[in-house]
Amino acid sequence: MHRDVKPHNVMIDHELRKLRLIDWGLAEFYHPGKEYNVRVASRYFKGPELLVDLQDYDYSLDMWSLGCMFAGMIFRKEPFFYGHDNHDQLVKIAKAIDFLDKLLRYDHQDRLTAREAM
Image (cartoon, rainbow, N blue to C red; front, side):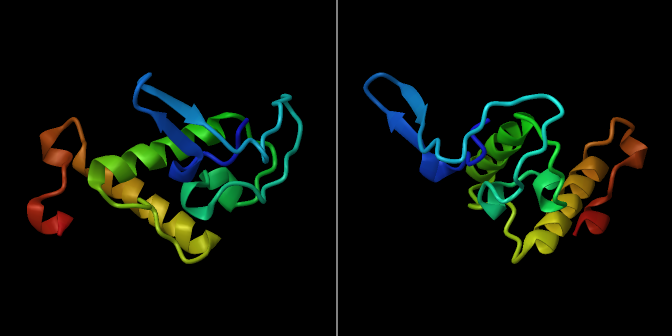
């Protein structure tokens, strides 16, 4: 697990068209069932499990961070989730996921209206 995936830790090699993940100082090998330190990663890229001090996390933590990076690039908002502390960060994540869930309903009658979305 890298545990600190963020834009500043991704280098771009334009010639070879490759991305390189750098700064492995917080990395750990994953062992199922092991508890890990939650004081890793940058707040804006932390998975919800770290924000609630869950020590039994895994490498999916890095995938959350990658998702935050992609959301920031797609929506041109960096960082995508900008909380003032861990609690505020978790609230912003929950609100964004809830909002998208209500917009992206399969049944068109269950979706938010434009007025409700505003």
